[in-house]
Image 1 (cartoon, rainbow, N blue to C red):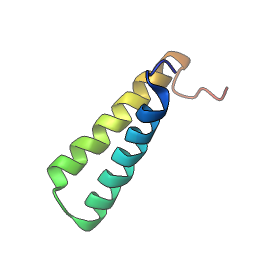
Image 2: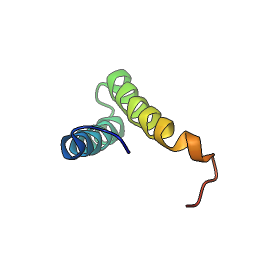
Image 3: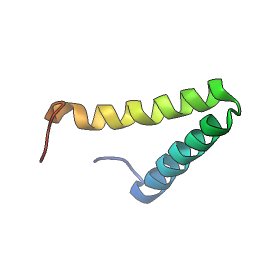
Image 4: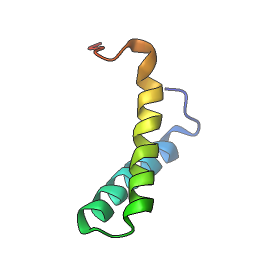
Length: 57
C-alpha cells in the first residue's frame, strides 16, 4: 500500500487501533482515544478511497 517501512507501520496501526478501542471501551482519555481511532480510520479511508466505497476486489 506504499507505507515505508511496512512492518513497523502495520504494527503501529494495529497497536493504535487496539489501544484506542480499549481506552474508549474503558472510558479513559476519551478525547485522545477518539482522535487516535479517527486518525487510524482516516488513513485506512485514504488508502481505500481510490477504489470506491463499495470496492470488493
